[in-house]
Length: 200
Ligand code: 5GP
Image (cartoon, rainbow, N blue to C red):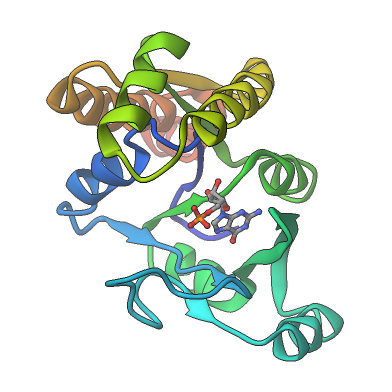
């Protein structure tokens, strides 16, 4: 692992994870790892910016050549983290953010146990339902299903290191930055600093 911090962020859909991260990423000590996926681009999504949109064949080729740090199947599509960019940026000293779902996060936990794991929560399942209703893109049936799915996903939050409740955007952004700062002050990440003071 390089000099930067590997930060894994998960949240059920509708938690405002994207909005929090786009604010955090205005700070250029962070690098956002662009995932690969086989799902079709949504309106406004740009290849290479939101995702690397790949065919199933190309994605499977990358898996076979060990090009993925982790991958998972979610709602019938592949999603994965291209390995190279992550390690290159960590080596440069950037704090690399992986915005991935729970199964992938648990694979990172096995492979890179020194990573930091952050889970973003809605204030309640009721607020999550309200937000999805406001977005107005799904039927009531789909919304009920998504809230049920969110509850299941939130069960995994117990396995993460930090929890951020997205009630107020600015507070959530500040909490994220604070958690990263605190994480860097832990003794396990400060041994070189201690050695330096001791002249070792
Ligand atoms: P969406 O299709 O809404 O963009 O993403 C669906 C889910 O896939 C989200 O929970 C998102 O965090 C997750 N995801 C995005 N990229 C990756 C990835 O590289 N690996 C894994 N495991 N999950 C990902």
